[in-house]
Structures are given as C-alpha cells and as structure tokens.
Amino acid sequence: LVHGAWNYLRMCKLILYSFYKNICLYVIELWFAIYSGWSGQILFERWSIGLYNVIFTALPPLALGLFDKSCGADVMLKYPKLYKPSQSGELFNVKVFWIWVVNGMIHSALLFWLSLLATKHDVVWMNGMEGGYLLMGNCVYTYVVVTVCYKAGLITNYWAWPTHCAIWGSIVLWFLFVIIYSNFWPVIPVGTVMCGVYIMLFSSAVFWLGLLLIPMVTMTPDFVFKVVYGTVRKSLTEAMRESEIRQTDPTSLFSKDAKSS
Image 1 (cartoon, rainbow, N blue to C red):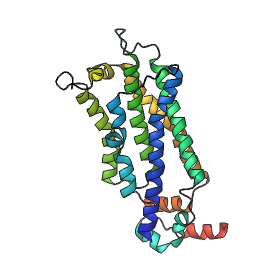
Image 2 (cartoon, rainbow, N blue to C red):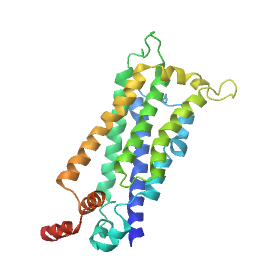
Image 3 (tube, rainbow, N blue to C red):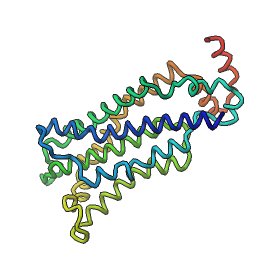
Image 4 (cartoon, one colour):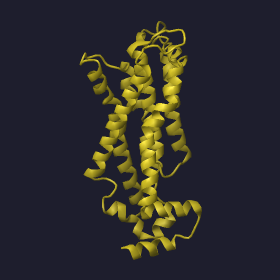
C-alpha cells in the first residue's frame, strides 16, 4: 500500500512536470514567431533544443519519479486516511492537467517577454557591443533551465541527496555545455554560431541580473500560491508532513479531520 501510494504520487508529478517543462521551452518559439513577424527564424541553437530533454532537464523528473514521497512509510501504515488522495484521483485529473498546462504557458510568456524587455536594445555590454537574437536565445534558454529546476524543487516533498544533485546539477550541466560547446569550432566543425558565445554571455551584466531576477519573478506567483493555499487550505497529507518534520504527535490532526468531515 505504501509503495503504491508513493508510486502514484511520483508518476503524477513526473507526467505533469514533463508536460510543464516542455511547454516552458517550446512555446517560447511561438512567442518569438509572433515577435519576429512569423519569419520562421528559431530563437535557440539547434543542438541546445535537441539536448533539452536528453541532458539539461532529464534529471529532475527522474528524481521526482524515484525519490519523492508524501509521508514516511511508518506514518502511512499507521494512518490509512493518508491514502485518500491516491484513491480519489486528486493528484491527476483533467483539472489538474490543465492547471499545469496553463502554468507552463504563463511561465513561457514571462520568460520570453521579460528577457526581451531586458535585451531589446541589443546593448548588453558596457562597451556597446551587441549580440543579436542568438545571445538573447541563450539568455532565455538559461532562464528556462533555471526556472524549471526551481519548479521541480518547489513541488518536491522529500529532498534526498540525489534530488539535490539532479536539480542543481542540471543547471551546472547547462553552463558547462555553453562553455565547452562554444569552444568546439574550428577544432570540431559543429556549432559555428555558438563560437565564443560563452564570453559574450558571461561578460554581460544584463545576463547575470536577469539570471537573478527573471526566474525569481516567474516563480513568485507559484511560491505565493503554495504558501497561501498551504496555510488556508492545508490538506491532511501536508499537515502530517509538517508534523513529521516538527516531530509532533499527529493524533490531533485526525481527530480534527474526523470532526470536520
């Protein structure tokens, strides 16, 4: 029973998060098409697009699908009411699915238009150099990777060491890729458009300021909603998890739940 409930929670999060992270990146191409007058130009470098699900965001859903859990095994065996969310389908249904889709659409819009606002004058260095659409594309891509990793952290209930490695390691992998891939050409005849991009990117004050602010602004509504909703309409599972962390007696939670029902 315990592993069944855990697996249900993990699969729900894995499926919903996988849709979310893909919407975050690929819908940005729609916003860019609108901005560029349907020119057909893509915003991101081709290999970066292909490796998004293979490397840069592959680990967070795996961590969610393997290690996340709502409550400890002993607690769930002792209090069968904790199985209710999995039995009633509260974690995955049509309503929940569309909430995640809309959330991904909103995040993609914020990530693109805020990045465009930050780089719209094409001057991102103090010496007046400009980087064009590809520099903006790498800025947006970086903010997307960071944001979807933040989102994975926000929905994680149980932080094991592989979860930390998966979430923060994914961000590190993208930065390492930019540095290595930008030095491929002319030694390796691929990625000519990325040649030297890491110097342009990492020497831009706008990039680093955006890295600090844009993912934070994008995730703020999610964070506020989770805090407010978890305070005003705290579920029995959340209350039990809080009791586990504080190491308090959870018996009173079930007596209150029985009275309210």
